[in-house]
Amino acid sequence: MSARLSAIGLLLVLAACGREPEAPPPHVEPTPAPTSSPIFEVLDWTAIPAWPQLDLDPAIQAFERSCNAWSDLDGESNLSDRAWPVGQRAEWQAVCAARGNAAPADYFESHFVPVRVRAGDQATGLLTGYYEPELAVRRRPGGAFTHPIRSRPEDLVSADLGAFSEELAGHRLVGRVDGNRFIPYRDRAAIERADSGAVLAWGQPIDVFFLQIQGSGRLVFDDGETVRAAFAAHNGLPYASIGRELVARGELELHAASKSGIETWLQDNGPQATAELFAVNPRYVFFGLEPLPNPDLGPRGAAGLALTPMGSVAVDPDFLPYGVPVLLSADLPEADGWTGLVVTQDTGGAITGPLRGDLFYGWGEAAERRAGSTRSQASWIVLLPRSVAERLSSPA
Image (cartoon, rainbow, N blue to C red):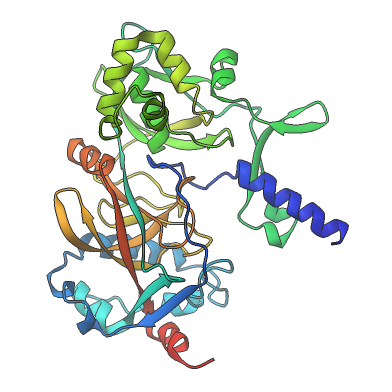
């Protein structure tokens, strides 16, 4: 192996340890994912019995946002050079231009072909859920509001490895400069000790911790002002589940390792135990404050677009590009046998591999409840422009 290849291999190892996604890690635990080459099966619309009954409004809103983002891009480029072969931007721009005023079902049936996706011998993949929390905050610490929500520190540096090698496109290293060395950034406990990053607001410990897990949220100050805490960066260290830690210690049963169960444990065990438990997760997320002019829009996902409740899904962009409509079928909380059309518009640190998704539920109590209990196997059918589907179905 050449010295260059050895160096690239080392960087890939480092990138895997400190990769910075374009969007925050959702509230899920990392799980192994299949890495086999995808198998595509072109279907007829009649093979999807649930299709005529689906509510397509969330998905069409999400897809139109993706179309708007593609409108001025170079059509000769692939939609993605590192993901599944889903065609050139020009092919997607063409179906976007054909949107018109047709009903969503008629539009998709006229311009897209459903294609079932498998990963090797696996026909389904893990589907979880996430949401945008809403939390009460204060401008100064006091009472129960003791935990800071911090902005991105000035000394946090993110290195795009794709600038050094095309083979490393999509990978980043996060750290800080110490003299003439680039070193990993501080872990959670060290950030708290060093007061890294300006304090934007003060919240209750469990609320701030779960805000970091979800990656964005709505902050409600005691004077009534509501703003969005938008993901700004994280410290590049891996995510670890405090719920899993409490189960491993025998402190909680698996079924009780929810936000409410963890919160009860924290209240029973006090501030010192809280700090020690939080330190189990070395990853720390920083935020920026944004106005909330339209409370009906979700936070920006990794694609840079506002997320749509029940219309946007987070995926691994190494396997599926942003902007692709996907029919998911899974048993969801309060919705056994659910099938829905969503659009790939986000990613997260625990969303890795093909057939791995994280469904955006929106905000509010119902979204929090459903997202926190979503963990199901889902089948995937992608909707592709006809020209793309024809190439997939043609002999090599």
